[in-house]
Length: 535
Image (cartoon, rainbow, N blue to C red; front, side):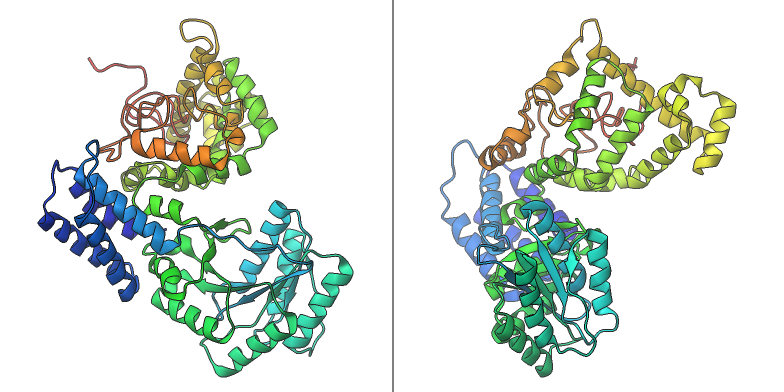
């Protein structure tokens, strides 16, 4: 998401921040490059012109704070304008109305309306604890109503029974009536689409809207269509009247032009973005967090929220207790690998770490990707319970059997065992007796055990995110963007050549020797054997 734009803007703005002073000529040259980068990202021409002009006005007349370099001031101005362009505040789906609240989904065919309807219904059910009814009004596309029925069965959400031959407007009325009788809080209407905007489509949408009186009318648009998505939004808004936008396939859009243009051109907020095929792959659109990601500042708030949603607190506490006792077997390693995958894998987590986004390409080139997680899980799952609990019993014959069962080689198994041995040594040293005794306990204790499932994945002194309010989380992100994670020695912005020594060794188990210590992210093996000093 926004990869191309992030790379371009990152290189342009890094050239400014490295200088002690800036001339007007330097700023003008940088803004020309920013303009070009935005146009290449398929941002609307009018939006680009306005954006660059506003940045130029503020940059020329900006009062430079003594403690801040001129280049950093320009970066702040660009960041603030990005937030303004995307919409200064995040807006969520409004359900504050008399039940049943009607939500109408509109858009062209193939934009992902039906799948998004299922995702939104699941999100409202899980997070808002509301009873939702889904109804398909799409009588044009073959099996469209059957698709929504299947999604309902998959997610456990009620769907309106299909009556063959009924008109979309009649289905809408029946859905609202069924929601009232069934005690549903929300009814979501999945309307029909076309391959292009035409008069019959708009007429049908207007009639459904008049009949059902929706509280929210959400336009579902494919982010990969770029500027065409903006034109579609304008057309639907003029004829039907939309209250917000949902952009799908944002995970496959490296440019992000549609997202940057939507709010500025239509004046309507982007409420949700689809970031994957799974039913929970739907995120709220937070302009400030998106701007932070685009400028490589990370998104710690979203990372903490994602961790809080995916971590099983009981399992996390059990693992924390084991680690405090210095115990760490292959079952624990497998749990951590699964936890990493749930949180978006290597790319998802690193993309949200301040400054770490620049490491993604280097890590991919070195073979450090999510496929490594899958291989390592396959190896562990091919072992017996006794072997997972006692890795020392693994000799040549057992390794040969495991390699055959997991589709890997003995060398892959040896790498995994070496990584586990290094991590187990760290856990034993930090949790057991000796000079480092209790260090892990303090590390996990400082977090209230709330993130124990990440295996001490945050540095000492890190507060419990579950007890922090949104303002404290925002303050934490600013601190990390400016100087690093508290207690971690910082995550410097550029991070040339690898993770710095400030990225603590025990911070994410498994990234042995990847720039500074033992432990790290699971699945990344070890560079030089941890603990061995170069003589």
